[in-house]
Length: 308
Image (tube, rainbow, N blue to C red; front, side, top):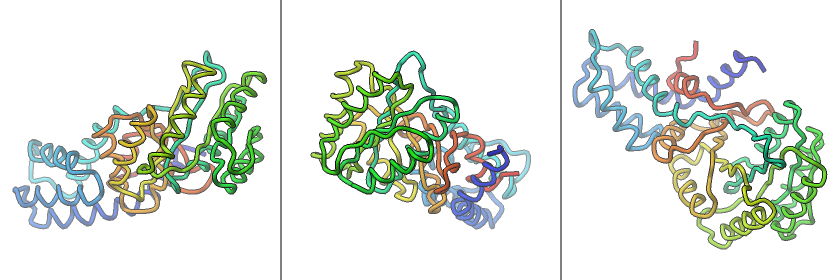
């Protein structure tokens, strides 16, 4: 996919959020004066796009302090906000890099039900196999037969071997077997699927901790990457998901899916401002090419509908 193709998809994916923001900003600026009332209205519209209270307040203060040569127009405010949002996001913009000195490099993929974990694994497998890496997929979501079948479909599509056990089997045992196979066969990368967990189910979260312990028994440095897959449509609930998963597994990075599914694209700003966790990739659709490395500036511009 070309850069222009991706930017077009990103623009379309964030169109609901940008439409919501544009309408709100235009309404806030109807009096054309940046007084306290206008600033309050701007802050409110940022909050309702799920940027969060803290980030919205910070952006409001930036607008209030700005030295505009003349009374700023609608377009001026949009470009200004896009630049400041990019400043919040740039520190977390980080590609998902594989350390070739660690073999196999182990990626543990986590998330709640419906976040798009298994699909994300398939998309990552496609990306890394196209880079020439050997990839093994571990079907650790043994609670859901459909998840095993779904991962096998992605394995067939990408040419990746899939290690699976019967539905209901011990996922920690499955992971042990998968890593043993990868070490024996000199595989570059192992991506481990896990059962979708509700962050308020302590028993399921404890099982995730058990899987991590099994991985460390085979390689004390692993898992080398602990990805948390998030669904943008849940809005502020994503914050509580990150908090809970961080207590059980040391999250090293985020992938944000379904940015095309709601007007809540601002949640990524809220996450970046609060947790400072690397954002490796974003998804704006169900297609196998709809997952791309996160770019803060492109995201911020399209969030405000400024894609040229």
